[in-house]
Image (cartoon, rainbow, N blue to C red; front, top):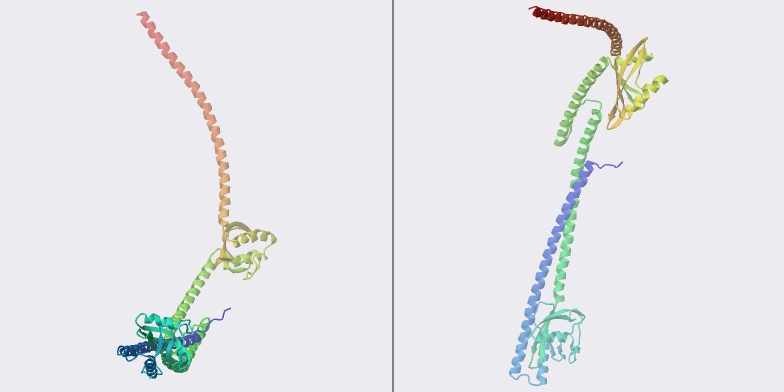
Length: 474
C-alpha cells in the first residue's frame, strides 16, 4: 500500500519551497539585470574607448602626414640625412591617448621595408613585406590596401611593449606618396579589456555579495517560516487529530464536536458540517430503525413464509410465520445459520437444491409443492429470487404462499365439473329418448295428415263429379 503524504508536512514543504523559489527567482532576475547592465556598460565603455582612440590616432597620423608633406613642399626634407633626422624626431614623439601608454608612430615604405618601429627597433631597415601575424594576416598588404584608399583603419595582431605579448591592434594608416612611405599609429584592444576585466571582477564581487545577502535573507526567512509553519503545523495537526477522534467516536456514539476547540475558521466550518452530518445520520438511523421495525413487523405479521439464504444455503433471515411452520413441519426450532439443505430428508434435498441453484445462477424460480403437516395436506406456491449486491449474487430470497384453500376449491370445482358432466350426459340421454318418441309420433301424424289430405282431395273430386252430374241432368 502506498504511504500517503501528510497535509501539514506538505503545507510546510510547499511554503518553504515557494518562498525559496521566489527568492531564487528574484535573485536570478537581480543578477540578470546586474549582468545586463554591466554588459551594457562594458559595451558602452568599449565603443567609447574605440571611438575616442580612433579619433586620436587618426588625428595624430593625419596631422603628422600633413606636417611631413608640408616640409617636403618647402624643401625641408631633400636628402637622406634630413629624412633620418625627421624619423628620429618622430621616434621621440609620444601623443596622449586613452591607453596605458602614450601613442607612438611607425613608418614603412611602399615596398615593405620597416623604416620606424619603436616597439621593435631591430626590424628597422628590414623587409617585412611578408611578415604575418598569428592569424596569418600579411600586415604590409593590409596596410597598402588602406593606403590605396587614401588611408583607413586596419585590425591585426602586433607586439605590445607594455605587456610584452602579441595582442590585437587597430591602427590608422595614411600614405606619403612623395616619399613612398606610409605612417601609422594605433591602439591595443587589450588596454580596454583590462578595464572590462575590472568591471567583470566588480560584477563578480557584486553577484557574490548579492548571493550572500540572498542566502542570509533565505536563511532568516527559513527560520521565521519554520517557527511560524511549525506552530501552524502543530495547530493543524491537533485540529485534524480532534477530527479523527470525533469521526472514530462517531461510529458508535452521537457526541457533537465543539468548534471552539479549533484554531482556524475553516475548521469551525468543517465542525458545523460534521455536526450537521452527525445529526442527519442520527435522524436517518432512527428513521431506518423505525422503518426496519415496521418492515419486520409487517413481514412477521404476514401469513406467508418469508426467508433468505446465502450462497452456502445457510439461513440469513426468516419471519415468524415461516419459523412456526418450520417447527410444525420438522419439529425443530429454526435459527440463523441453519443449513436449508442439510436439515432436509434426501428426497426433499433432491427437490429443493436444484431450485436454489437456479436462483443462485440469477434465474427467477417459482413452483408449487405439498406438505403433510399434522395429518393434513397443505399446498404452497414458492417464489425464489436472487439477492444481488454490487452486481454479485450473494444469496436467495424466498416467499411461500399457502394455496391450500385454492387447491381445495380447484378440487371441489373439478368434482363439480365431473358431476355436471355426468348430469349433462344423463339429461342428454333422456332428451334423446324423448326426441326419438317425438319423432315416432311425428311420423304417425304425417301419416294421418297424408290420409286426411287424400280424403280432402277425394271429397273435392266427388264434389266435382256431383257438379258434373247436375250439369248433365239439366
